[in-house]
Image 1 (cartoon, rainbow, N blue to C red):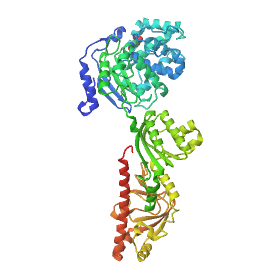
Image 2: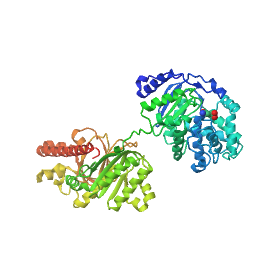
Image 3: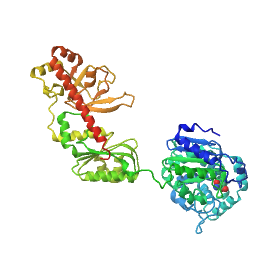
Image 4: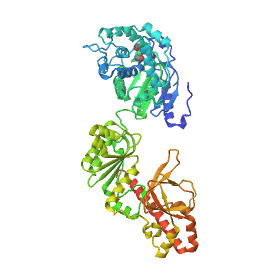
Length: 619
Ligand code: GLN
């Protein structure tokens, strides 16, 4: 038995330990004995394991004790048959209706002899018979390999249990012959029934069950190995038959009480799936009259209640997909611009609207986004939809967002959107649904900031006269504000001219600071981090602004790297020249210090304004 880990340290583990302690004393039910070898199970063994969809395991009790999988193999083999044949052909072999009968009942449809569902023995034997087998031994090898993808480890068959079941499984053999009689099985049924006995005798533990369940919860991808175990489009089909038929003739009350797709086996195992969240495996061999583990059912009932796992108690609130909405008049990109340009953005920025979206986008969560955007379209010339905080999107949400983009395009506005790794290529979806011309009308950006910059540049271009090269008038710099003609002449003698090419590093983070850069032409980007791949662009500076002021003033090493984003011409003031000024022209020196301080405080003001908008959630 795995010793109970220090449960006090982890609240999740503590809940499992409490459940384990609460149900350990329950000795109701009996170990299965109709397969003689199963009767040898130690009735007191008891284990619980929960696996998360990001691959973390919580285990209590005998979670590594091996037992035979029995009927828990059925949904997985059904998934394999679906992957091999598809839904239509499989529907002609096995139905999906709960039978309400015991697992070994001969529940075949009157008209065509099809078993009612793949979770009862008749349906399971029919399903196993569909798995392709070129030669004897092929089929069980395919089944074992499929189960390996779910558990992440190679599995063995308990030969004693297999032989015991093969010796005594006359009823299952009879079912096999009936299926052959109805042409559900088209070959000698002996092989299919034999492979069914073998698949039931595969040895697993609670940990395996939890990981198998977590794989189904994770849309078919094993969260520990990353391997796909079943095609994504068949996951919900498997979960559906588990929900309606997985607990035999207790399936109705199980769904009512626990509300999760699940499967039990007469070996004492129960596996339950909470789609998108958890996989649960519980083992205890004493069974109730219907063949379900008594303790395992109780643990799942309690866990569902304590953790609020019932599928018909959905946890999320659709409104949370709207993160922030604002116009470019009230919040700007991180581009530092001349004051005249900022004033222009404040006056005309309402023509650009930004909608930041977050979380998982489904129809229900994307619908409020679409609704809000449509309601706020009046006077909007460009719309930015930022998916930077989106964790996933399904096809229906992508479809309505694509339709929205097309509609906005038809109304003559531009649509810009950002993409992240979590998102499928929205342009591709738009191209598929709405045609290539619409897709190419969309502008795609790697991040929100460059998308905003591009819109701001557009506003400034259409409302401000083309900028005279900055610095052609010496008194147009922030640093020269208030200087006399003589002082301006001194200033001019202090600065030198430098040109940088696109991509040049102008200063590096950590360097000693010597210079202040006044940008005459071009754009300078500000980057944090090194070249190892995690560098991040945090701001940029336009012509007419100055950069490098912080380190220039406080003498600390450069706090960031400056990179020329185009051809850049600068007037450069060196620290030495500035220091000399303190003695030669103290009044001018003081004025320049004040001007640098004013420039830095203007940046702080802009940052504060942006923070004000960020506080205004769902605005
Ligand atoms: N091998 C068992 C049988 O067919 C499986 C039944 C079960 O787990 N309910 O009898």
